[in-house]
Length: 313
Image 1: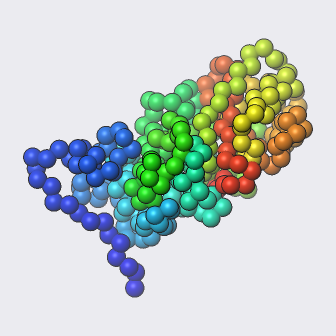
Image 2: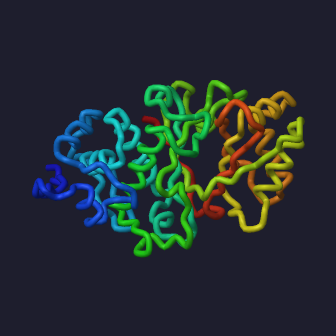
């Protein structure tokens, strides 16, 4: 017989400010949240056929029980649409996988935080930004899906800053970080195919990412020149040596590919140039605005402290 892990409902006086009540109970990420009224939670749950009482995972470090209903509550507070819920549920499954080490990510003094990368048809179905300003503001799906996962980590997992979250500095991506790959503009196979999935699979990859770092190379017009610039940036003293995501801009990707470099060539070139990265630790994807010779480096957390997880929806 399944256990009853339904959430507790509070009776609130109609004269009280629901947003302030959320603040008083510590249910926010510091920004106002959408009050999770029963009607809103019920509407959110229409986004999935899964039983509201189904246990998705225990979320460290407090090991709170993330049921479908409790995840839906946090999705409401984040401002999500019901259509986003299946992706968020899969993200919770991924982030609590043993290899990801969410317990360590939640309590470390480092500033890493779960980063979501979406691939496959679901990118278009949910209108997840893969272009201009994809790491920034202004896109509901990106902002609220990533925020929902953060609220799950905080409200269910207990990752409260200064308490169990011991990050010395943190970074803005700890509010939310959800991006998609610009698969149509990439000269290479997308990330999820590199990780063993089919092109038409919809997937979410969870990565313990530090703050994004910009690589500016408007001067080089060869693959070697651009890759040397990237290698110099990621080999800078203080960067964690381990899994690292390279979000290669469209213009850089086209130049690199035109010189005959595939993704394996890129990984091996950077590994050889830095002499400190293993080629299989470098995860490559293409995204960003169509103009501008930029690449983004997202360092990970140590050599083997956390490993990225990719799951199919």
